[in-house]
Image (cartoon, rainbow, N blue to C red; front, side, top):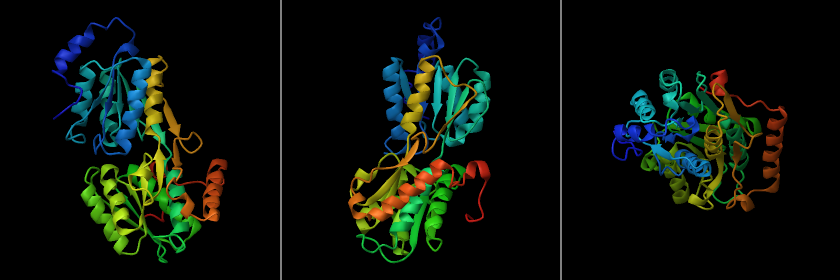
Length: 344
């Protein structure tokens, strides 16, 4: 197992931190536990880490990323080692750590914990939820509007789009369900192909899977697979079709081949909770929710593709966004509501 924050050993680090135990709790360093796919994914982890670095620098506290080659199986061990090492705040990006984090947090009441993408109990635990389904709805609607518009380069006349998730899990399916709902609301006849790569760090698999979807008639494929999704974007570039990026603005990874990106502002979320911790206003026992209204999710500015898309299509997407914000459109949340009939 490899942890980037271990410079010499956990015991040495813990002893070093013990000298500052008289200081306020928020003077203790913060750790960011990196999720599957690792740093360098140009997506979820990298964006969160950018927010983390900015926050610890602003707060003038030490901060370190924690990575493990077996981040899923070693959940409790990772959390306990980091807690024993004297970190005052642990921000966990790994979805599968939820239950382990809630258990470990009980044993370290003076340590603050943050879990993203779910709600876990504990007076020293803050939960952060994104309304990914809202941004994904807009991505699906845009894809469905574009997929039969042959005036747009790279688009065929088949009403087929796709989505590739990293794993079959409710956290990923939350994106996919929103994407399908948005697509079907603007065109019930659109076929949405769904597949899972079963990992978040293999672009070669993403490339292969996306090319298979393009061969089956899809001209737009949404990637919800972290680093694996970089291969989806590469496939779009190689075949002359389109990908939809996720989490960070991935439009520039293949200019003109990424229709849009569904932004999930993990940087904003991490920066906020680290700032709250440093300012002794940590939202323990609370849930922070970030959706379209809070600018926690959004579509990218489409810098490289906007001029290819008819104005009426862009206006329709803006109209749908306004209806979500007003409550006229309710986007299905698979985490809270379970799975809808339209998603088998």
